[in-house]
View (cartoon, rainbow over the protein chains, first blue to last red):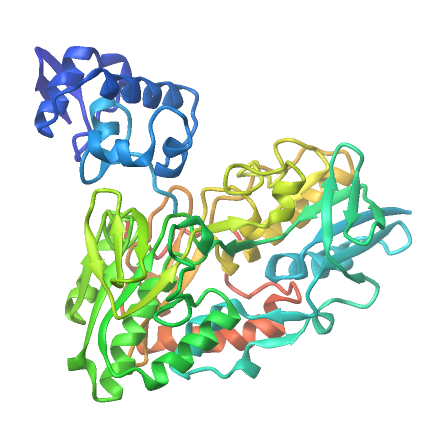
Length: 102
Length: 411
């Protein structure tokens, strides 16, 4: 599927997660955040860059791992990305929805 | 004489002992299996204990009955593995050398991971059913409970048998109906996932069943703490769910011996090649069952399919041949839905559970992803199969280690 955002035609899946991280830039990140009613602060950006870095290293993401990453604790993670922080932050970061195991 | 050491005589380790005893020449290879317990527990039975469907004696038998003669069963506790030296260090100081190590140490609950879970209400109004003791305590509680808010809760993934908490909810619905008190029990299913299960098609079918049985679902709930005083669970977002009876599946972790040996990830699971079952860190260490970090279900059926493939890979390793990259994550699970019915799901790393027939395409007799009485009979028959066929490493006819695509309705 395709979706027009911030002047770009993005490749996304049916749930709206980007399927090609190389298309992502900070403007797109801001526009995706706005869809979730989030205005990105420097702390948000730190988390987003951490998530992208983990994704590039093929390290699976979980709330537990993020909480122990030293980048953000779980309480703050929820404050930054309310409700379902892992899904919301992954969507804004332009990476696939983390598989929450089987 | 060379030696294979198997750590853990649960489902996975026992199957491997039987397979390898059958395949390896006894004059060239000694097989040793180590476990600190003397009893083998049929873990799928823990689901049925709380509802008085199974009695304790149905699900506990001595370990030695299932270990073939000729395999040395060593009853003792392991301090740590020294993988660089090829040694298992026992707590009593004894050291056992191995040429090949098979890690089958399983997974355990760790309620202490959540603040307040093991607080004053633990085993009063907060129970688990993932241990024999926990399931029995819960049985006694349910026998005398007069109703209220029942919350069935999963702490975090991955857990052993990810469908068990759903089955518990369905069986609880049937149990209270049968006792004529369903109107006095509100059942809520609380999960960190976005729906009833991890795969979309099965989630749709199971969400529907929850609704039909009047079980409320609270999804995306990442628990922060248990408030023992006010009897509620609270998530990191501040969401609160009150309970009169909390049946929780605590965080699951690999065995502490993995942590002491420095062989695990942050949840003590051993990083393992998902197709060959060889440990990523040591060529002569293999892992199967719940102890691995494979992105497959932590379930007995998975261990069973793994054991068939791992046996072949160990023979290849011994002969200096390349390992087969064969394991596909195949899982096959009965899901009890209450009132004498069950659903069967069959899936692997890449294919989610869908509708169809099993094991014979177009015929069944078992129905995939649909409730039926035949599926329930299959689940009950499985206990006999477990004790008499599965643990002995006998191949189950018509059920292949790799998932079959025939007979499945992939849309």
